[in-house]
Length: 288
Ligand code: ADP
Image 1 (cartoon, rainbow, N blue to C red):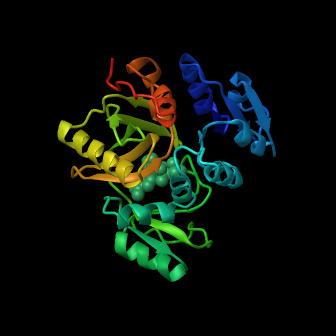
Image 2 (cartoon, protein in one colour):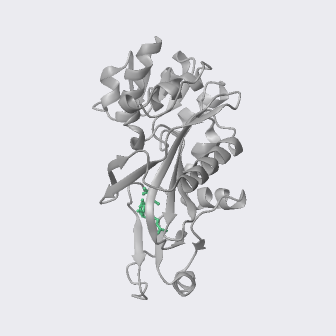
Image 3 (cartoon, rainbow, N blue to C red):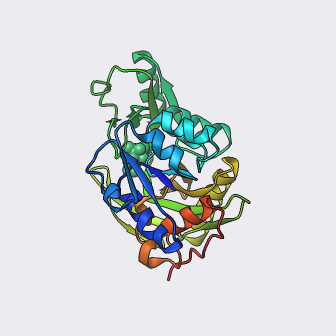
């Protein structure tokens, strides 16, 4: 198996996949990337083509990997999951529009093309989160306008995504695994706590009503089916104080809010991702 991206999620995939007898090749631009040292073959810099050639199946542990590598792996029929999810994740405007157009509830949003639109968003939503659509993660590229404090901090680079500021009761994620024949298992809904935009700790199962947890699970399963997804998919939600369940974003990969599954679930998200994309039976996801 080839893994594009050599971060900690790739490292954990390798450690878990070894139990199944899988050999791993890893590509990363950075020779210090942690998964490289645990791999059976290291590919650095421009050598991704060789990795795709030598792998039977190619997956990724990060959605901002080399687009040429993704394209080649897909053309050779080796890429799992498919490139649709990667294309959606290149741009927050494309991702949110896809979700809305297919009927998934998200925070209300507008696409901002000029300073007039910035004013319109502030009038419409009152409290607004402006987001740079491309290349931002871990809460970077976000600008908050609260209580009419004007548009001064908002960058004049367009387009931007403007979202209503949501009164969040809890942030939760659903990690699920879907096999190529459409069988889906979800891990318990997990609640996530961030510090400076970075996940600090998670609690699973999340401290939310069963009814809300079931709604989140059903939305996540609906999204996986809509994407005809194979492998582990993570869907992040805002649960509002009014009990709404809104999709914030998804990650087409294993996720740091599921590190606990290494020892806390019967089969970890990492092992299940590998099982699903290799066409092996997927394993039980319940909390031990
Ligand atoms: P990233 O992709 O950089 O992680 P997100 O869009 O997931 O960015 O936002 C990061 C964090 O910012 C969220 O986990 C949440 O705490 C906060 N946030 C994002 N969008 C909103 C919103 N519309 N209303 C309130 N808080 C938000």
